Image (cartoon, rainbow, N blue to C red; front, side, top):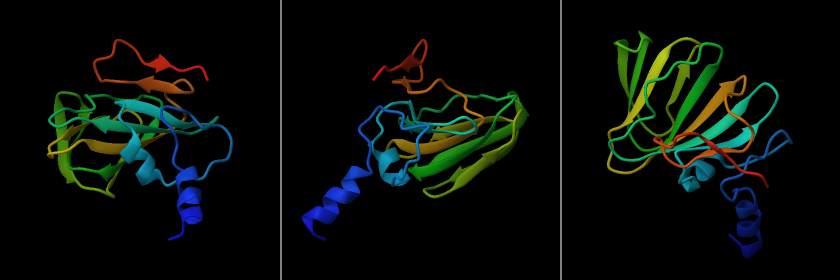
Length: 152
């Protein structure tokens, strides 16, 4: 591969954190997720859809959550996760192992959690419809009091 081809490919890998929405955008999503070192960063926020990238440290989780008005798709980009799904946060009807390239489809109102059970950070891309976070939101750690919003 020539240097110019390398440069063209690198141009599609974002500098984090930054939200590229709502403009049209083309990216290698797997590489972008691997570069994200924040617990959560919005990558693209549109009117009806949002893409966030997550970095879950070893033995940590996204935290049990439910989105009453949002459907969500989570995609494992790298790592090993234990997926937990249920009607309420105290009774999980399903637990599944998920590896790189697995997708988890979560309808509105379903409780869910992903636990990193691997030996390296778990890299996830997450799609919300409609958007769930403010444009250009960055949450450096899960225990951050609130998400930070960058102003670029």
